[in-house]
Image (cartoon, rainbow, N blue to C red; front, side, top):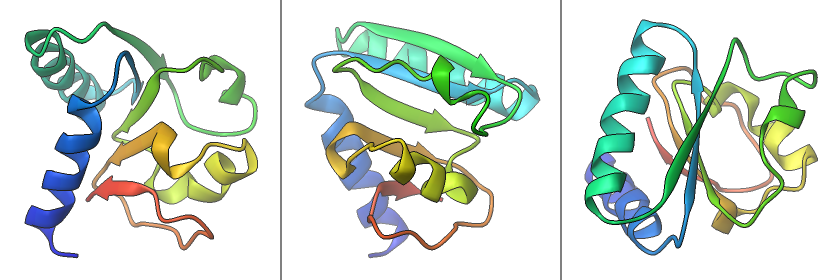
Length: 113
């Protein structure tokens, strides 16, 4: 898929979510990405909450809620897809919006990169 197709797939998944949790990197671009996403999602009338992490690693995975919300990983996740897979997250449960190098994974998560 091309970039436009990736954006369209992510947008459709986000619009269909009943609730969303944004898990974002706690640096300048991660905070900016979270702010933009949070505003856009709020305008859709979808409840949204945010979690900031220093990095996505086994020690921080407990901060990712185990609820029914769609998880959007912003400014992280592309290089940690195997960690997300090991956590048991499915393709329907998450979207990755990142600019880092993508890691090969057994699952094809929706990703805009």
